[in-house]
Length: 342
Image (cartoon, rainbow, N blue to C red; front, side, top):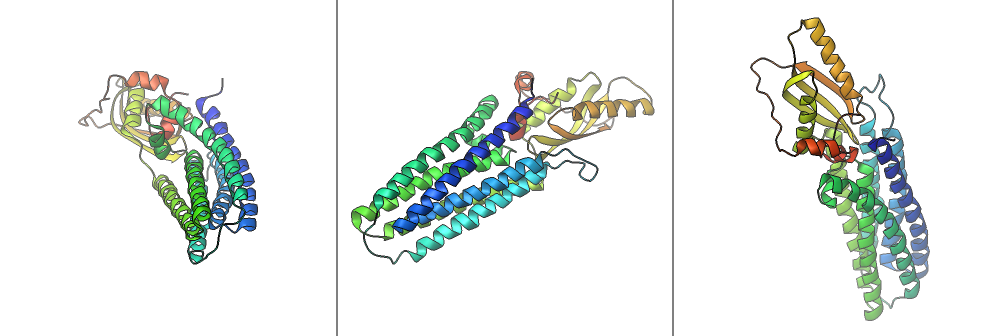
């Protein structure tokens, strides 16, 4: 039976592929409509969709390059490369989406005249809602499943998750649906009032929305590139896992750091059971490290011996063992509780 991580990566890849196909079709339709109608809101929406389409290519590259196994040159693996390519996608959304939309809206503020061919705009917007909705539902299903297991709200899971491709598609599709509503209002108000300024304001509003989303995505990728720490829930679950091993008597220090989507670097100071000589202790420590690294969630584990006077870490919460048993890779990815055994 495939592991949780083996199931999760194809799901993320499917989410990105669906988003790419939907955005490409939407971008073509919006471009045609913007050229025929001259609507500022539709120009902004076209720029938005082309930016999203390009971003999905970056995310596909991120999924592929970040999944490579660690080697001698990269002992911590390639997981952080996922955040680099995801940051490229976020910068693309900011420049090709936000800046273009705001600039075009500002240049159109002085335009006058009634709206033309509004029916075409409405048809394209309706098609876009269907396609964007399909893509968003896929991202939402993936996020909701993991959030349910962590017992946290979906939005919190998306923001905390170490999976940047899920976060990017979810945020971009949500922004796209909001942008479609704004574009509709811009076109509609232009039609009923005859004032093109509403269309221009719609373009500016879409640009501001994309800018906010892009900045959030850039910040989250930046944090993971710098070395995002894990949540107390995950640290507690890992502590329970370590103490459940028969070789370990107590744990006095624990450090966890994300080095990629669903991948952590573990450092711990432990006191082993028994009273063996130094050579045997070194072998036992290495055995425990290797067993930890067999987990699909741990890129590298480094264990050292505790000092006699070091205070022992104590797990908190009576329901942690059950949470650990029921944990999945997405729990670890988002900083929740998850088992570390393969």
